[in-house]
Length: 115
Length: 113
Image (cartoon, each protein chain N blue to C red):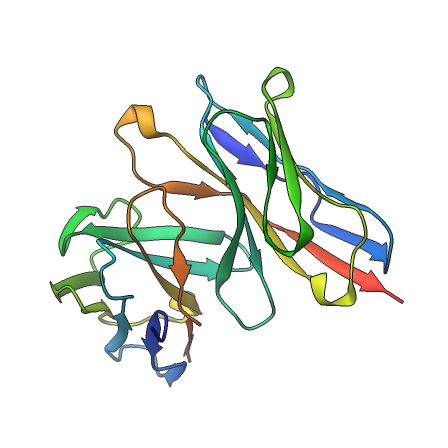
């Protein structure tokens, strides 16, 4: 079945440490890929997206993500996290070649930052 | 622009009552999405509109749910009758295109007692 998976439900990182959040997809073709962030009590905000081209994508707030076709992955990274990065992070996919305009969201990874 | 506006922000109602959630998308955005978020099921797309026309309502859980978009600046999601299992945060989002950035509203937290 087609799906998007975020294997980590909850991750705790020390402030200043590096971060990598995992996202894997299971589709026959390369989908459009997105990362959104949700701060407590708020709606989601787009961090970055990948459609084609350079597989390393830069986003807002110092985040980047790398598309790896061989691993069907689109992991989100940040070299040094700040306390304000504590939030829930969602990977999402779209399938433009299937007449489907919807995004399918992963289950999310909650990020906790410790001092 | 004020962003996507949703009202009310919080709604507490009793089982069996009708609930109407409202959304004003960002001006000029052609796509409007309604999502539901719960701990158990995560973020689910309920329905989306393109140029005020409902395109896909396959995520609407049952006939008790209905959504309308009478014009480009207003949409409603109605639940009638409401049930406790409808308790969730409901988000409205809008975008210029299906794969452009979706701008989310602050959500409506619905509690059905």
